[in-house]
Length: 280
Image (cartoon, rainbow, N blue to C red; front, side, top):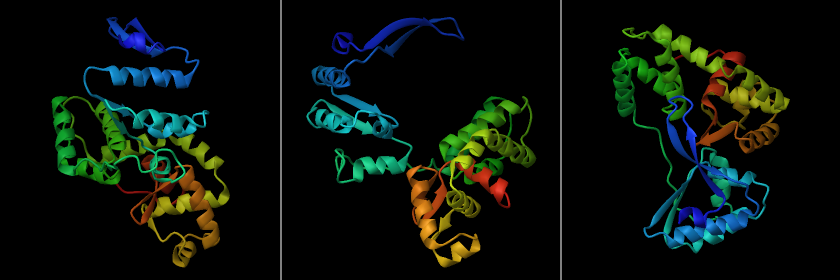
């Protein structure tokens, strides 16, 4: 019944490239009429014999689609759908805020906001130590805590780093502070070509400001005379203009009353490249 309703989906049997075991896969065929495909999806949701939960990850991407009225179309379907609950998640907070908190947008005030904070330190530390031990590797609690604080508990960066560290360690080996410091730099520097390309796309004023923010880690009062003077910036007005552009491009984000470089690896790389470096 599902595939009769949603004809743009293409079921197929494939071989897993690693195991060689046949697996069931669902792909998207050619979508000739996006609006009709949405109608198919919501028809299925309404006819489902149980209430549905639909989770859409990286929802901010909807703003980048060429169809200008897609937000309005989707909003219309959602508000008339009585058999489903929707979860919208996204990693680009500024774009998500614009979608849901701008009065001119279709999804304005249509959701309840839940902000997902970092996993609590003790929970994350115990998880990492346990996984290391399961692989016959050892790491001290303090070293895990150092990395956690360096990345402020941000799961993607913590997981990325410890995955690399785990792969680099031999069975029976115990991790040292030197190893952690070395692999933080290895991890950060592995993205250097991309970071250099990003810097090359920034204007002089944008580059000066993002470097200043990276040096601070968490930068407060970026348009104040003291901040402008400390980092040799042009003026409060040029900082304001550069800041707005960096926020729009998601290179910088605001947390509370402070600004940070959105990509933690990028922030550390900027601090190392143009500042005094960082300490694990």
